[in-house]
Amino acid sequence: MNASLLVAGAGPVGMCAAIAAASRGIDVVVVEANSAGRSADAKCNTVASRTMETLRGFGIAEQVRNAGLPDDFPTDVVYASSVAGPEFTRIGLPSRAERRPDPFPKGFPDTGWRTPEPFVRVSQLYLNPILARRMHATPGITVLHDTQVLGYEQDAEQVRVQVKDGTGATRSLTARYLIGADGGRSAIRHAMGVRLQGDAELARMRSTLVRAPGLKALFDGRRPAWMTWIANHKVRGVAVAIDGADTWLLHRQVPSDTSDFDALDLHGSIRDLLGVPEDFRYEVLSHEDWIGRRMVASRLRDGRVFLAGDAAHLWVPFAGYGMNAGIADGMNIAWLVANVLEGWADPAMLDAYETERHPITEQVSRLAMQSMLDTIDAMGENTVPPSLASRFNPAAIAMRKVLGAKLHKLNVPQFAPEGLNFGYYYEGSPIIADDGEKAPPYTMGSVTPSTVPGCRMPHFWLAPNDSVYDHLGPAYTLLRFDPAVPVEPLLAAARRARMPLALLDAPARRDDPAFRHALLIVRRDQHVAWRGNTVPARPSDLVAKLCGREKGAA
Image 1: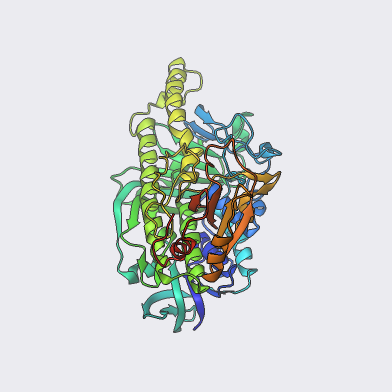
Image 2 (image 1 turned 90 degrees about the vertical axis):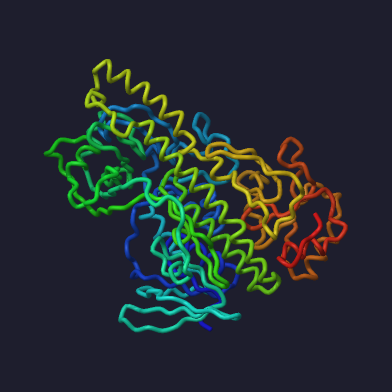
């Protein structure tokens, strides 16, 4: 056998899954079709707080935070007639420098978020190399570049994966389990016979990476923005600052009836998005045409094979949660597989993956789709008059003010998506002890912190710069908020089952309404698995449930 776990795809999802599993002592082979050192694309430009919490656990959060934009570059979001044109509205968000020493300074939409890690506006161009260095430095991971997955077969013991290397030679690799994180055109999904279902076309887009050294000089002293949403009488689109200097990613919304992308005026649309004259000099670094969809795989599992990331779901990149949701997939299945491979968890625990993640992909994809449709509707698909770009026309100023107020109210939740980060919960999971209380509802922008089993345990600090999340064990952690509550029967039951259960005594949180119980069992991914004020009468039943063996007492 080549490895206990084989991961197809060395994008952010596959790399995170591999690092997480190998950190538990699992031997991992990662198969990647591209050559080593190939530059990533610039599609994803936000690393969400939940993902940053994961990267904190890997020890690379600070590297990611310091990458990309300069310290003093604002992460504001602007709606305007062009990058250099007059603004409709601005959603102010802090620069890296403004997050020191307080990571959540007052006066911004994310003030008060319960996390040790603010989201980061950083391009995947910078994220991927950091993850790759961490992956290659992790013992137990073997990476095979220039290796394409052709298909797989499996039996009751293992998966045999057929691959082809850069020379054209084919061979089989064997593993106990396989994670397909090989992107939107996933060979693993194709081999599974799984279809993507949903909305096949929401928008047609052309993405262009450009270098425009003279663009910032056209800002006339205005505070720059990380992202600019653009609407004028010629184009709709988005511009993203990649390095805070001269590199920009431009997304142009293409008319829905466009059948020939090659017939589009590439340079005309670039100038219209930037708001520059014909003699403005810039360089096209790359461009890609694509279709925005909302598609989710009909199932995420075939025996020993699992889908994660774009292999499992595709949706428009609104609220910045495409890659981030994929990383959450990868962390979930890597945790489950590691538990089983360590020998203490029943293989039935793996049933939790589809039960937990499939509903979340549906929820998140629908939130992202609705956010996109609402924004397009608010900006007016074909109703922007040429005069809107006039800086001093009183009617244009009034029109921009009305449109700006509407867009600001509509889009603050998209760019400070507290609910999308922290609100989702796992309902009906076979390894979560339901206590009968429903998890609170959430929206894209709002969440009610809760310790209902299945919810993410709200973050708190044990001491300055000492996050409770930093103390969670690799499998489960028993948090005790009252040292007088005896817990030895539960710890003993866990030892008998060989289930790792770390004990963490924490100060009572009497003023925190989310914490109403003396005891919590929390998973490594911060989701609450059980809560109570005393140890259950039959602790072995609860341990059995957490091991994926049978229903347990709450």
